[in-house]
Length: 108
Ligand SMILES: [Ca+2]
Ligand SMILES: [Ca+2]
Image (cartoon, rainbow, N blue to C red; front, side, top):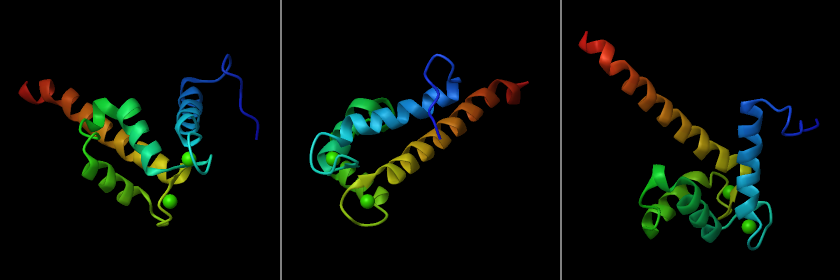
């Protein structure tokens, strides 16, 4: 598999590459370069998902997200575990989008 260069990549391909790059931007800070420690996860949540997750400053919120994501229980969030969070949030956003776009029609 070869990654297309960004000039001829589609919007979705670019979005996928950005998810990969974003993960690695934080995962390389400490310990294992390819997994997120609790501190790296917290930094990513605050910096990249602050608008969606709001209170990730809250320690218990980070602990809960970490616990939910770390499905293999190694205390680190790998890319597969991370992408489940992004996927779940994207589904939630889509539900919100559909609901929001539905409302004016229902009133008719
Ligand atoms: Ca790491
Ligand atoms: Ca894990």
